[in-house]
Image 1 (cartoon, rainbow, N blue to C red):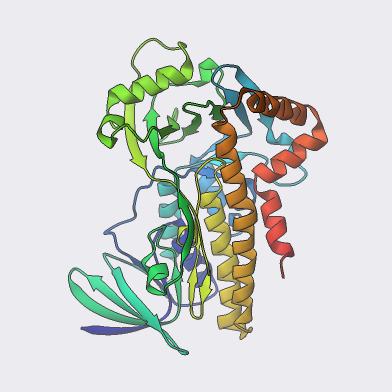
Image 2 (cartoon, helix red, strand yellow; image 1 turned 30 degrees about the vertical axis):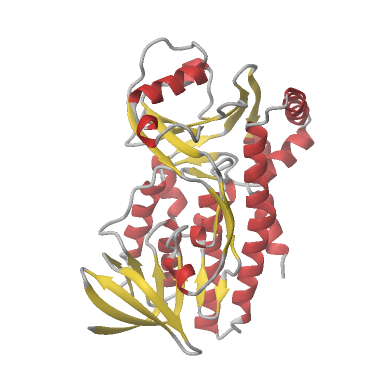
Length: 405
């Protein structure tokens, strides 16, 4: 049995964990990232980056690396299965609010190697794969962690621990923090194809409302041009996972969404199915243990808030923890991290993602048409359009967080 002493341990080598590590390492703080898997993982769910996220990542060179391989999306659409295009939103109206008046599409698993490679420049930073957290405890001075590494038990101690190990976080569970919220009854399916939807009039991001099965379309870069089109849809609880993961289901779903615009089977590159949750941890800080990203909050993907919110957590937390370690600032600043990030998640990320879902699946015809009228009126008025896009782009969420003291 080995006993290893560390300064900061981060559990989870996803984008949130690696970004926390990179920010700490850049300030000279020794940091260790523990990852249960044998390598960086591939997650095909998240892939939309909003303007404030790109702003945050610019000073450390991450945004430039992302822009080289990502797809800029200056326009996105609100659609309806029966009525077609409702509104096309032009983010150019935000050019005075951000240097990045667009969304950037890039698969999450193409961001993590960028962060991981940058982290290799710091000898006081390390990422340990196949190191699975089994449990932890803490006292006033340190956190003790029990790790399984190829069936060998390792004991680590650290001054601080950051849980960035996802919605099923062992860190969160080990320190008995409740994960308040609920799980949606329907599952979500993600289907990817090389079939190009642009000639059919689709922007690189389009949300299609429908009371039976709404659709979210995204064009993702994949391994290079022309990229892949990804479709996310809710799945009827009565349909089995096995049926959902067949090419037949994928094609039927695409054909229904496109309403006869295509007549042949399309090439299916990828299919998956997963459960969706709306939950927020009761605490983002428990003494020397801190939570960030999906460990602290999860939400449905409509609006692309989840990964962005996790990155905002990482930047906020790393800055405050650096001030505690390097500048002897009171640990009370970590409570400010919790207030800022938890408040914004409850009042913004959860509220807007739930609202987006409910609007897309609205069954009442009158309410649906009232919403369409609202969207058209909003888009036709430059002031209303800008305010709408400041919310959907998460610019307002950062302003709100920064005002919390």
